[in-house]
Length: 406
Picture 1 (cartoon, rainbow, N blue to C red):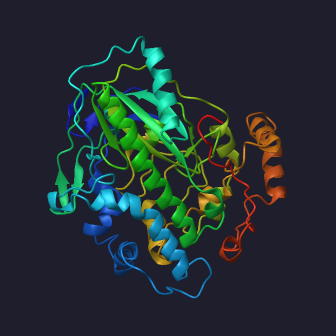
Picture 2 (picture 1 turned 135 degrees about the horizontal axis):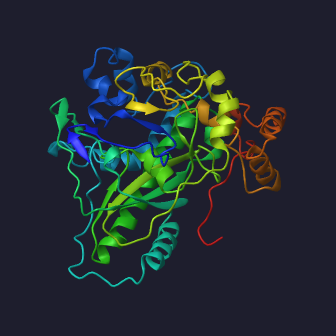
Picture 3 (picture 1 turned 90 degrees about the vertical axis):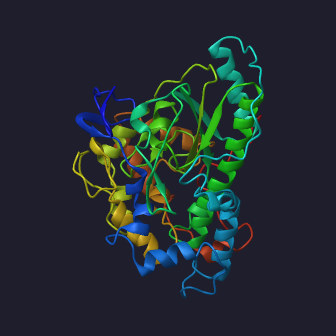
């Protein structure tokens, strides 16, 4: 229950993998570090301006380093093109869909709601549909007001605008899109940025398709990416993974090599339960991401409620990344980083018996042996972008994308 704007009375529920205290305060999208780069002198700089501009025009060689040359940026920007089309489609209406506002390119819903049977039956059918339409992972959570942004960010006003959500939308369908493992293996590079862009572009199409299916049944569906609500707690509530030291969701199937989207709906489906498979315990002893982070943005200690800056959520005890330091490095290299995803020991190919054996071992008291095994394997070694451009030269050491029905 809300007692004043931005603050809610909560209990200590662990369903987001976090310890939530009485000082919890809902988050404003205005304070997201990417949005702060447009209005906050502490983040805004010539480097951040160049970073965003680099996604909107062809580049000549930006620096003389493999992974950051013209064809690398050409691929990165091409991968982002699908998501960019929808983001820029209604900018004259002060909308940046998928990043600051929900996706809205949908046909009207049917006037008649179809009787779908029991919530459990419809949940199973919906998941089959979602996988068929291109999702790699799908789970369902109950709506939780704590994860609704208190306000959205308006580029036009360079400030806040309302963020309303129909209370009838009491379910959140969370989908995951696995990112290209061979591209992530080159991180940090513009090539690794192509994996991110491709994940977002695929996510947009899949979210729209699933949402239109729901609307065709006569129910409401509001597809969202980074906008409107926080994706990480919903992905955890929907049973897709656990929270990791690097501030990302770690899934059994793809590690943290996955992007999430959400659909807010009134479709009467049953919800999934959060899962545990040893991530919290493993992250408690593993320092792969914090040791490898180029910007030292990832904590190497225990979970804490200490805030780095206004881009952290107030009143939660968890591992919190310093967004200013992280994004500062992105701006410096002129592309997103993804080193933490590459080095995370869960980011591996779990379709093999070795991958499945490692995942099992990591959930036992022998998890230190699992870390030793991972270090000896060389799995996390960075792949040269030169090798990526050579046909069949890049070994796929991470889980491949699954084809629905296989």
